[in-house]
Image (cartoon, rainbow, N blue to C red; front, side):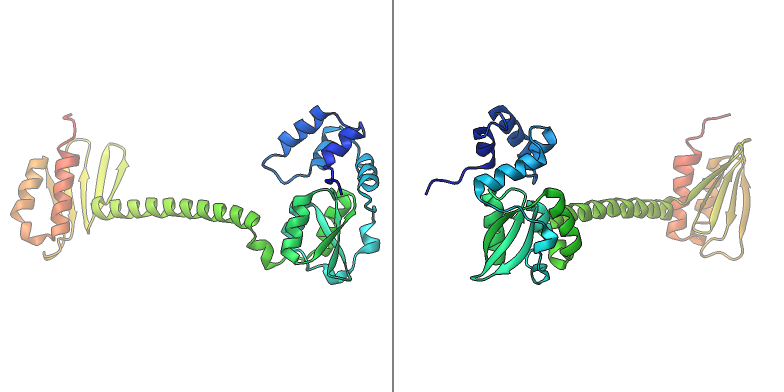
Length: 268
């Protein structure tokens, strides 16, 4: 028995397509799940009817109407993702463990081997139009857990989940950075030519004329401060004098304000 001819070889032999057309369709097909016949139809090389007729005659495979042949007992035989991958539709289970399978391309040995390996049944190819198979899959093949965890969807889902996780990680990282920054440096607000620094129950205000004010509560002092200074040096001297009234965090923060914010001001 001679080797079964592939679809491209059949179409070239019947002069329905040129070898150049087949080669171009194969190049387009590489890396995708689209069937060669589908690509050739979309390219305008052959019509849907021509494909059906040539395959039916050459492969001795009947053209069927799925609604006339379909048996509900096989609706769970093949998961939806596998039906869509190969554009196939289980039709009916016959004797001797045979599964009648509607296909767009019954010469697709890879699809047949994959379906047989999955089902453990012997595939008997039958021919049906692509649109009829697609409609039948949507109507008769239930979506199941197997479709969620299949290599195709699961791979895409993993990439999506990884991307979402990365985005969330970035968001959490930014939020954590902002929290740490506020915890360490507090907040800064600007109104007109005045700037105010707030943190650890303390507030340092700097007016446009150079006047500096310290307001708030020292961790170990009685009452609240409301003191004005004419320079950052005067504020520093006050801080050292009252060092025991401030917590370590307050002391470090006030030093940061004086050294990095007040001392850096340009003289007016």
